[in-house]
Image (cartoon, rainbow, N blue to C red; front, side):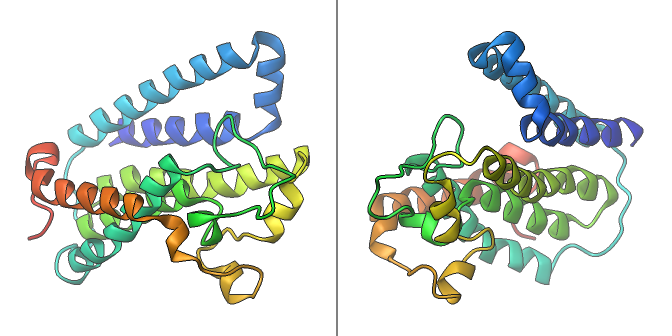
Length: 226
């Protein structure tokens, strides 16, 4: 279990401690952005492999019963999480690596960004929290908890870094979007336009969800429901 704790700390620490702090700029200034991205990608892959291996080797220490309601909750939340992930990958996003706001755009946020400016982070975070609850053991709390901390804590840290950099268009983008899904819409700063998300994103998300349901036993060793 100690190995899992250390792997989780390393996974979260290398992402939030480097990727979203002034240390990132210092490293880029020394080795260049291209080499930084390559090095950071290699470290990230190594961190994930270590975390997965440590999770699989960790003993089962139950904390609560994870079936029943929590299992159903995961099944209900994962379609939205899948849509967030797919939309984050196929639609432009100023918070994504290598992208930035367009100060001349008539609408600073479109599609899923009207719901939240961090669709990728929320997709990962919802996946992590629901799976942590559905498993209910200590190793799962550490494993999925690491992803949840990285998703939500990393998104908040990313907002702070980009606000500090204050690139053209970032201020209006923040004003028209929200960290929490639907918050900007409920506050009247944004409107919900389902057509901008697109049927392509919905179809791909549905396909991803069905694939994960069917392939869950072969990919992860346990059925998606019990």
